[in-house]
Amino acid sequence: MVTITTWFTLGLLGELLGTALLAYGYTLVPEPTRKRYLLLVAIPGIAIVAYLLLTLGIGAVDGGGHTVYVVRYVDWLLTTPINVLYLGLLAHAGREDVWKLVGLQALTIVLGFAGAMATGALSYALFALGSATFVGVVYLLYGDVADAAVASLSDVEVSLYRTLRNFVVVLWSVYPVVWLLSAAGVGLMDVETASLVIVYLDVVTKVGFGTIALHAWVTMETVTAADETAVTAD
Ligand code: RET
Image (cartoon, rainbow, N blue to C red):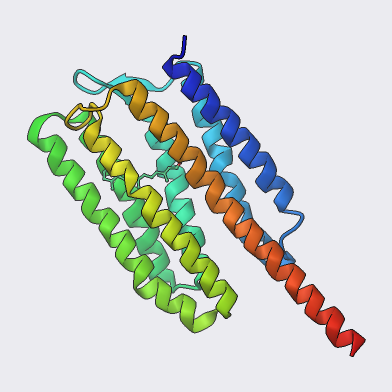
């Protein structure tokens, strides 16, 4: 029988494979970007621990009549700020903007968790506040941080920034919708379906983000190396 543990196990496998792939990629990316690249390996790496715990049945609490997976929120609290930190660093954004990104994203997750644990009007009020802080993150990613990218990066790097930013904004926007539809919100989606959707999104967002960056850096490295060979040959 397919149970919620099946979805968690698939999530665990996805994060394990993704981490292995991205860890291998470390050897392929250009030397100056390697330190920052480690953030991208840490993102699914942290999720391995979260999914291991979920598979073992650890990390669920009662949020006033429905299950709240605390481990999931801890995972998001650690990994989504790392994700926006990577975008801020990639764009060479100012220190203040990078902290704003990280802080607002962490607050989004804390407020979403508090909302899931609360009941009634308070629950929706916290959800609304969490949505507002997330709008702040999106605003920065399309505003100041994007401007910093354009001012300091090459065209290919700006294009990588834009791809990663759009990927984040589009896919991450599904999370609040699932929150609202699940038992934390109106309860139209049962806990199994919500978990299936979230496992799928978690793997795609975490591994997808890293893979897009890895592919871009490897391509840039190859093109640069080819250019250098051409110059030497001339
Ligand atoms: C919550 C509820 C409060 C309002 C908003 C939310 C957004 C959550 C997001 C989660 C992203 C998770 C990722 C996980 C990867 O594994 C907390 C659901 C806006 C954006 C990318």
